[in-house]
Length: 404
Image (cartoon, rainbow, N blue to C red; front, side, top):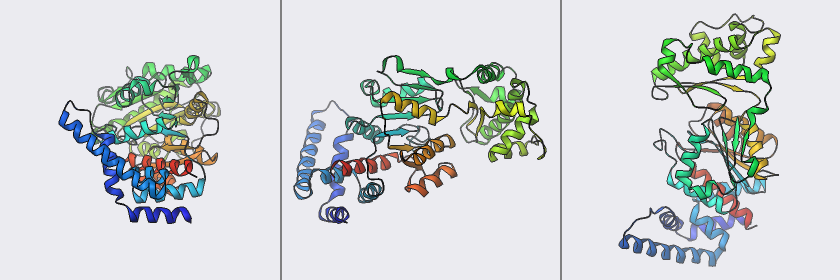
């Protein structure tokens, strides 16, 4: 209990809120061409140093750094995590959309605080794996803009893109770009080639006009031409999901449309509800052809209400991408912070739990199963757009581990 007592005393004895405000100002103050502003920043920096030194004199450098970066609640949560797991986080595995940034909470931009905290972890030799369903070019663009070209190309940052079809880790020679989809056999790749080639030309008019094909290297993803989550987006993605079942049936020689719909309807309640709503679900007693099922077992139809309808390969999920990224980065014994909001992120969280390889965190608006997983494991559920709160908690965890 000694560490808990020390934290109680620290947060009672010092005005840590003001200390943290000075730290945030010094860290996040935007660069300006103003001598007056620079002098103001220098004064704040001096005051921060004096306050930090006073805490360090009383409790040591570890607790001084912790107080300057974490709230009382975050510090105690960090100590709980350290008491439970007895090790620091040595890699970050981070989803982007609705995790690091949120259309509803951060104007779809990664907050400056979050970007700064990522640089702090980088400076403390914690590799970063960005794990997303987006295309590589999109991810590279906003990472370089937010974190800088030098950090992204440092050799300690990896991008798992298109939910696991490829891994991009600059600075690793022949392993810089690993196209995991090239390892699939022809039976699966032929399905994707067919679906990709027909998905828009053969689409019903409302899907063709209301959707666009995301520029993926391998996955086939239909996105709405309407605001995500709007009534129009929900309607067109629902229709697109039903349409993709028809394309998959055409792409798999042994499959009928009823086979495909029965298969995915039995495995995903959301897809089942979409099929039911459009009177497209086959009878409950429909038997899926065994040859068709063998191929369908390797293909995933994913539905994201009002956001996307997607065909992916079961062998290429975020877990496959993350493990490949960890291999390239040389993280042999990972203990990751896994942050995400969707079903694809849940698989990584479950992999981390099953292998004692990390902890999970989710925004409070994440899908129900993801949120429940985060709550039931370590309770790391944060407000929309507030990913920085979890990063601060894990920063505190690592400082406690370093100071032990």
